Length: 355
Image (tube, rainbow, N blue to C red):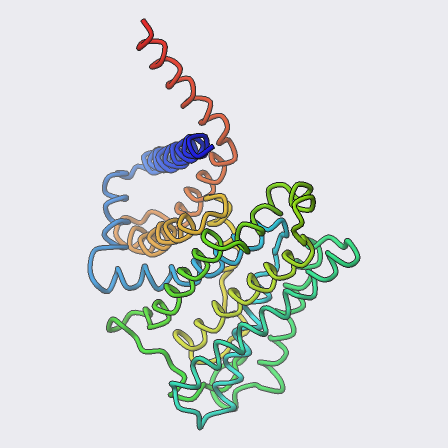
């Protein structure tokens, strides 16, 4: 059984690596068609992502929300419940953290920051609980409800930021600034990398342990892969789906909190450029594997950071990175075809050895 799983894992790694390589090759062809050198473009991209401590810090700053929202997707999807509402949960978590920061201003940072994160996790988790209950109690499709809840959350928090909690000075669509004690420390000068990356690492370790080393993680994955067998095995599918959804929403809420505590220091009505959807793509690409989410998030962070430098140095539009990401996803959808290629290679090698 372990040998079969190892073989399947190797096939998927081969498919993923081939998808990335083919996407980069197609990207190079597009660059050539525009009269530019792909070597120069990709060198600028890599240098823009990793060329200095500041650039590395910027890459990892962009990685933090992708890891959290990717893990949120992995937990929910592995459990057979599809949380498409991460963006709304992120917005509510962000507002909850900001509310703590500009309301309870006398708390010391050692208490305020953890409380803000807990408050954000509760906001995101509770918001995810509602569609989960509608799913398990009444059979209402969670994909539809979570998509609708995204709109409700973004519009509701926009109203809060523009009216009852609007900043008395400064920009429209923003709350008051949080108290200084709530601000996460920046790790590299001029970059947006903050101490939230250490919290993120601890959360990632916890999710890895939960999903890979505990009976709860086994139950989650069994429900997602074979719900009928799980029920015959005595696993309470409905309860576990609800728990997985709450964890997923809490992770998105924490991702929103870090945007407030570490980057903007207030809630903004457009605080996320779509982090939850990017995290969803990251998780789907690696089949909801926790370690895969972390590595793919770093890769996507490199693409996002490096694309800006590539555009500045070579005049190649940064949107090319979106094309590369889309092509990777397209090829991953054809994973079985790549797996068949690998099997044929193995079959030929086996036939050669028999001769």
